[in-house]
Image (cartoon, rainbow, N blue to C red; front, side):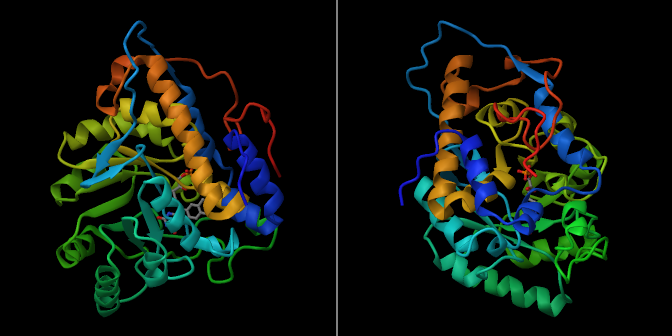
Length: 357
Ligand SMILES: Cc1cc2nc3c(=O)[nH]c(=O)nc-3n(C[C@H](O)[C@H](O)[C@H](O)COP(=O)(O)O)c2cc1C
């Protein structure tokens, strides 16, 4: 079925129609007051562009490289658990979409249809994100499977020491039975020591996802981490944290070029992508937007979402006067006052102040 979405707002609206209340609450809900989630959006709204004109941008191209892989736009797909709640083909549909569009997929260890089946769903390059849910023997067995299935990088998520209180599903009585409010998370006892052991074991690039301070970024670099993934889990874990784009400049400084940088949290527009790259991220990742595309129209929905994002990135780059991602820098940005109250829908034209409940 061909999809005719022209804006990602249309994708979000279609996703809302496709999902029942439980699915919507799971995909969209942040922790407690959802302040962290809102700050993710607010952080993007606090920057304005400084465009340069009369530059020949006829060759504008958002392609970039990440961990040796060419990607069509500097946007990859963040790990999303429980995708079967969003679409029956779950991570398999996303694997097809990522390969068709030309970007990288990070597969969560907590989603259907499982690591081998998802790996086989397309020949696209994939990373694997693993929650630690067992002892060393369990970890070794999982890592062997990850390697055999052909995943190219290992992502350790570190902001889940406890499963947070996400009140939309709590109030709706639809929270996952095995992940109830504020239970000890699978990461409760994971430390840098275990990260070191896993890093030695995996023998592939390691990405630590959920770094939120310059202090931890510096430790990550000391431990030889290949990629620092700046994230607050999309505002789904610790409430009253900072927006990720606000974290970025300090983290970039602390890393000093010694690791690659991914940023996620609130990215829904091409202009968001361009701002994050101008401030030093190498690539951004999308969680909710990926889920909305998947809910709206499965694999084709995710492809269409990425195509729209690509068009927005091209527009922002050309109108800024840059031809390539490498030309983006802090010189193209200035601090500005936000014009709208931030929330998970505030980037869409027709939904100001409105929540799709
Ligand atoms: C429905 C859902 C499930 C998620 N599951 C995982 C997961 O299994 N592992 C993980 O590291 N992050 C998970 N995340 C967080 C994302 O990887 C990412 O950090 C976040 O969604 C980025 O913010 P955004 O949703 O505003 O794009 C999940 C996010 C959503 C929306």
